[in-house]
Image 1 (cartoon, rainbow, N blue to C red):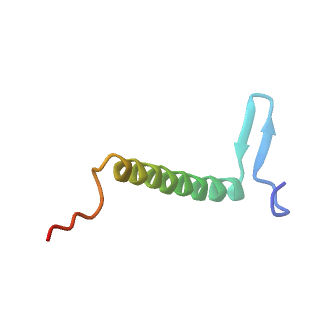
Image 2 (image 1 turned 180 degrees about the horizontal axis):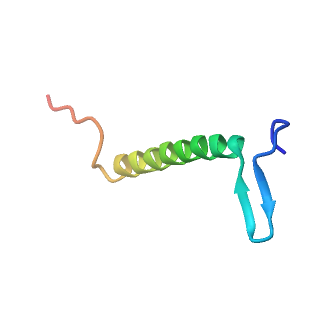
Length: 56
């Protein structure tokens, strides 16, 4: 149990998310997307595809 509330319910064929589990998974997906975006941005900076170019 995380934060004192069950997230998933065990069944013979696996687990099913409860309401709190659904909310947790929605937020976890958003965090994963933000992390992936950040890694992509850092890669683009490293390879010179993103950044600031100043001439003059």
